[in-house]
Image (cartoon, rainbow, N blue to C red; front, side, top):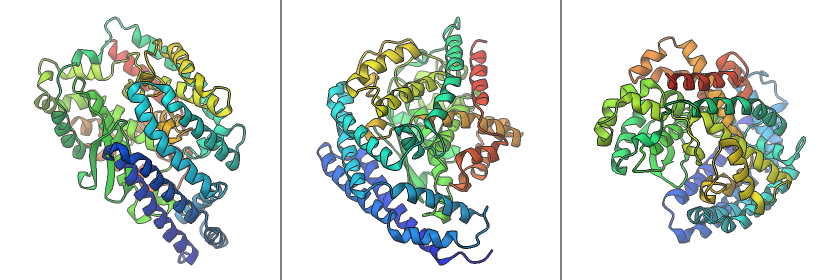
Length: 500
């Protein structure tokens, strides 16, 4: 292959500058969620707003248009990684230049203030504290959607930022297909004569013991603890700040150690993806995740396919009982059943695998209505409670366990939630393909050897970055387009196992 054009190297250099700025912003966000003193949030919002404006102006400079034109006029092989990177750069530049820097700064400042109000509102279960901030962020999101343009409704433009190529009508059709099957599977689980429950394991699990166990678990599944760290926050998250620096958080419940366990396995899936992206491509789209749905597929795979398997509980049981004395009266089979219990519950991040996507359907339906103006912010709590009872059969007792439970809307993350379900579907399909390609995978998992699985994911997913659109990446990794059937069969099989 001939040498890359000079313009490509200039794009890469600009991209690295933007990656460094993004990492700096990410570090400020991590600090805000973990260590920032309460009185520092307003000033932090100003800092984040300033950095967002600087980054946006660098990302939309006319030099980039010229460099892209030069690259597109060269004879790069059409299917080369570099040609794919240029196509992704063009997509991002076109999208970024639709939005003025001043609107980006205003939105970032509003997010900073909104996030602080959300924490207070959630703590006090008082939606009116957060409502004006939600109104503001919705207004700003509608403005940006109008500037980006959309095929059918404003939500399309926001969804494109997380899952390029998907439209609201596509997600609606997918969820319409999933909903009756998910409800039927859940109802079958609810009707089990002796349904398992996590409540049977409630005891005293000191936070220090949980932390010690998680520090043992993380390197075993492949997470490089010398290139990352684990902290606590109100809402668990993972930030891949850059090479050698991946930050994760979880939250702890001393009565239920599974809260932190599955929070960490979930976020570690994100972290393994971030640590597996090619460091040599920092600053190019080839060094970025393919999409949020693909990112979620990694977290859900490690959380559910590994962490909720019989093999996991059996192989880790001696360590669990050493770490938690309150487990000594139980068997690993008890914990496996409890970890897979299908129960009506209020909190999405603690929901079981069967009901989880019902929580996503609810959020998707409500946020599309909010964006279109069919639902007012004032009416959101009542609408949430009504739909929640319809889907999950529970009366929501307060806003903290209702419409205030997630951080996403306080961060202006409209369009984010569908990626969780896309991630669930993808994770099951990837797991199916990994077992096909690695006949010895069940044995290695039973022996706590997760390297064959991680190597497969590195090869099939992580190493490609954004070279391929998410749909093509799934096709290449699994041999077929994304198909909900693999995931639905996993759920049906799980309920069947629990009935035995």
